[in-house]
Length: 146
Image (cartoon, rainbow, N blue to C red):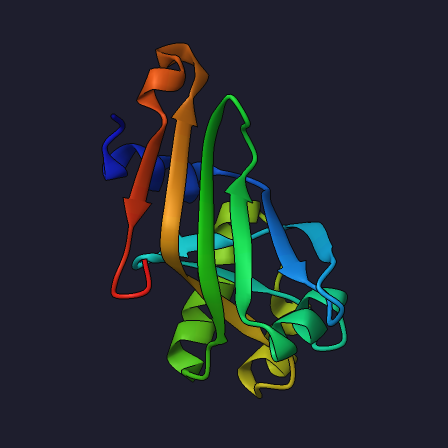
């Protein structure tokens, strides 16, 4: 079995993440996003009118996957919009460092809560390292919902 620290390392270091949300009719919508694994949650930003945000407004359940399928971490969780301005400010600074991308053009809308930042808290997560074989596939459960 894989230790949770193995999964956390991949969640922190992944460059791109796949996020799957559910459309109002139930069909899936998957998109690539940038984000941060921070304090036990996956944080990402998106436009309030994006398909992801509209989907999460009606169904907070989603799936987040790291970018390396040969060392996959899949997190099934619940997304909540981050309201704390200090956490939003920290997200902007950390994302700018991680992606070497100027986030100043998004700062006003993110800090004023016009545009959302979501925190996806895991309910269950899966890890698979193909070098260790399928016998090392691991499931982690979190909290009362997991």
